[in-house]
Image (tube, rainbow, N blue to C red):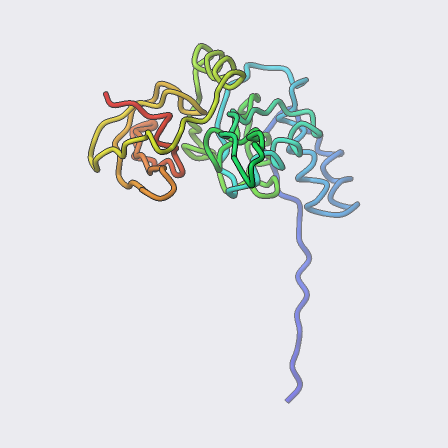
Length: 221
């Protein structure tokens, strides 16, 4: 029996955004398909784009926060990974100074115009899992909270984990630092070894789980 193979030719996706030049998109598709189109859509999230900008949060693969931040910054997109200084470590009589690390693993903040093209471009960045709240109605941090996040990030030092006490399941808490600053939620899981928790928050009427939350950035309500 002779196997027949069919070859399907892709076609460009039409993005309903008046700022996108159809001729430019067609040229990008003819050049190398999705790669150029992804780059063009990501450019719609760049800091130089006109329009009202909002701070949203991308969920990324754990450990890839700074990689995603660098990719976005190289594309001209304003991004922020709130960081803290890890505790110093004593090893063989020497004190090794702690390095900067994300306050919350797996999340990157982005300041951009929330057009369909920009959101599609952000979703397709390497190591990005999704947008908190979803691409249709992303959760936005208010300007006051972002200002406080930046201020706290500059002087944040990781707490001594031996002094952190676990929260109880079902307990209401509030974020004291990080991308979800001042947002309230409920503790749904606690990891006593990693000293972090999963917190369920209410975003746009829906329950959204936030993972890898260090216990030291939470406070009881």
